[in-house]
Image 1 (cartoon, rainbow, N blue to C red):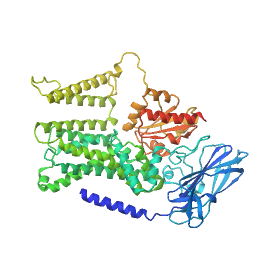
Image 2 (cartoon, rainbow, N blue to C red):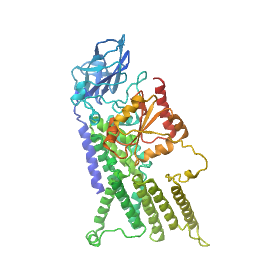
Image 3 (tube, rainbow, N blue to C red):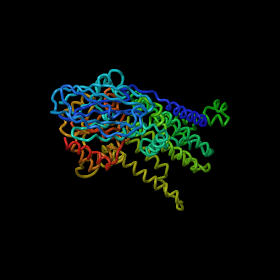
Image 4 (cartoon, one colour):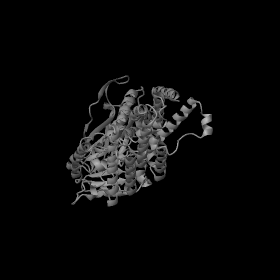
Length: 619
């Protein structure tokens, strides 16, 4: 099964390379997407977002304004190119901002006609093109696109997903380099920069970069719960399993995870909705947690998890049995990818942004597949290493199986906790720790001549017993934090460093609050099932230095746990697919460079807050 999958994957990559050798030409409006905005009463910025593989001639620009007189035109320097038609010419690629001075200023709407001409690297040149926009000098910072670009389908897929129709999209994802009044062009957000790596079109760069990013993501709380899942299943096969078989099982699990992650990501990029968020409900999470409880009970010897006798006789051939195991592990990996890791990180957001903007599901899917393989590489190492824990049968083997049974129960609690009442979650952790301590003989006296291992495990059992008792006492006292269960019993007044957020439930509520804000605004997208969100809440926002800086902001929180239609509309408004995501606004406009996707440590987040404070101080 693994060999067939690898052959199929290699064939797919070859097909991708061949397909990319003959790209389809874009319509002129998409190849050279033009927009404009008023910077202040005397300056207009015209910006071209030039698609990869296309360029504009510097000497072919022309600008005509009605109701206003244009002064100096500031066009950045381009790069020289040997052109087959015009000889040595200066051309522009990527993002091109052009500043136009308004002689004498303007206080009435301006109709601006912009002419340009460009070519594709494939050897095709477009005729000179004129595009028209209408600008309102009384609304600086509002970017507009030609009406025809929005109406004829020339707008990016991401714009259409947001359901804006003919209205321009006010979003840092579609306008990552937007210039704030009085500021230089903002640096792209991290996810937009990662999307730029895919736009480079270099297959090896994409594969290596996203594999490395996935490797880093494998050590985050959103991926770590997969370790006991895979290890527990391999350990459940018993001591007879060979190293090669454990490697095959690990590969099947990781490939199942990677394929599902890729397909779900491509679907999210094309539809604008993350499939995993729809699965974060009590029925799905409860069913998945129950599955792990059943697996854990088999580890404790409550019953033997095996096929019925009739099916065993038909699958007596070991090779056939192995294929069944591989298919089961692949299915478990697929489910784990959707249930255990729904949080959005910057690499995932960058790949989804690329797919949404270009519609190139093949190249974006390749990036996602490489990232998923990077996330799964440590899982393969752990799966193979699990075999070394089973050198022979006997008491040692039973102890290892019970250890992984406890880990599977902990994973079940972790999965179900977002949909459980906080008190039930606390009691579940307390029960697991106390029951585990009893298995470790925490309450039993040691024999007089007990060995070092017996004493070590008894010590671990005593620690588990004390931790479980602390959680139980804290829950009875009113605490709902399993990591700090006794904090409620501290004497004296305790000042909570965590900042207070105002709830935002819809686009209309957000617009109304932005219109009345007299300070910079921070909008935090949060969900109860988002582990990275809770990381930010517990460790970053609660940091005293961060909390002190956040007092300078209007703090808003969009709790999208229920994934209601108004929550989905709010996420689409900013090109987000799910939490965590933190956006900053100054004067009602988003500061693109400060957008944060995924968790950040306190020191990094302080630097982000400083950038926003610098922008707001100049307005």
